[in-house]
Image (cartoon, rainbow, N blue to C red; front, side, top):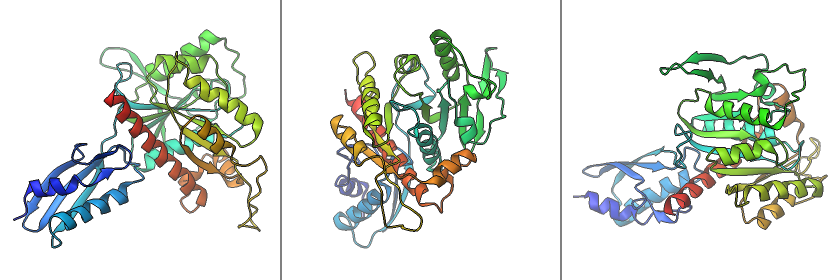
Length: 356
């Protein structure tokens, strides 16, 4: 007779490589059922975007086979329950991820959009705030430029903004409330108030991840968001050339200041190299090489991935159908891997926070 104790003892040999503890200690094994040689249980991962899912499933099967019985028929339900950074400000949003860059034009919004969609494609509940008040681009990249969010009253009689929904993502941008052909000449206090409203006055519902597309630089909006809301971590986007790296270094340093203290989840290098269609095996490093990796090493943070200079990525954003939705495109896979690594780092940061 196979017992529950035998199964749990076997699964104690399976360690989560990120959290450095076994699955039983982490309370990741649930719904264990035994019927003769038939064994079933659930492995509750910390994110649906876990890049280790297949490896952990195979490790569990091998552990039962090796430590319990080679005759066991094992059924494993790989599910997830996204971990959260505790907060009292927006308790319905488990994790807020800031996507930042030191300078404009490095593809920060492209990364933010495809990151949000990657997490949603994995099954997470995701929202996206376009906090680039002066140059909102999210409406165009989702093909919802003419959309106008509706307002409704909740049970307490307070007016709530209903985010626009597209591709399974809840969206809010200042671009939904302004004329796209007119500039937004707002002073700092007005900008800070507008950004807070995107967070506080919207009916976001329950979200696993909120992605925030920050403007370039280190200004009022960055301070308002990082000091006013519980940010789980920041993703830094850069291109390889020195001028972009210099600004990205300042942007990353801002998050680590004592008055802000937001963990870095990692660095994404965009426009890493160019590969002509007629020379698919060639890479031309137009803007330099390995700048993003070097930046990640300097800040002791993960290098999340590199995105080449490919026209289809830009075209996809302009057409309102981000590249990650085009599954046949090799760039979709690159962005999905970045989304998985970001989710992985969020789980690590939340575990560190919980242990303090």
